[in-house]
Amino acid sequence: MFKYFQVGTYVDGIDNYNIKKKKKNQIDLIDQFLEYEYIKQTTKNTFQKIQQRQQRISKVNSKLKKFRKMAKSLGRKNK
Image 1 (spheres, rainbow, N blue to C red):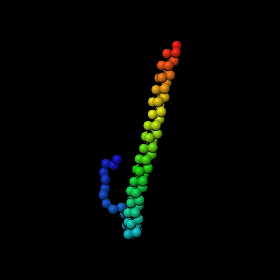
Image 2 (tube, helix red, strand yellow):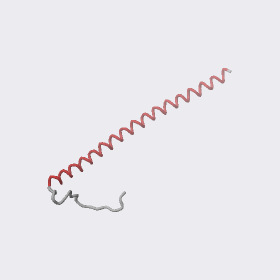
Image 3 (cartoon, rainbow, N blue to C red):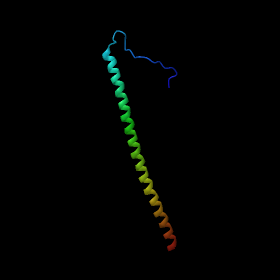
Image 4 (cartoon, helix red, strand yellow):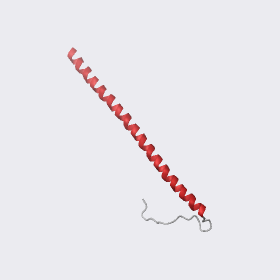
């Protein structure tokens, strides 16, 4: 993170300054914010899918543990 900040208007060059560039910079900034929102939503959806997959895997693993435990206990009783 930067230690010092400057607040102001970005000017490409005094000779090249015109209103069209200023409007273009504003549109680019808006596009960046919209893109950020899209990335944020996509990341959230991906995270939720991963969490759901992990929950399904943990349920299957817990059922397998129960079956293995039952199999062990049945094997001991038969001996």
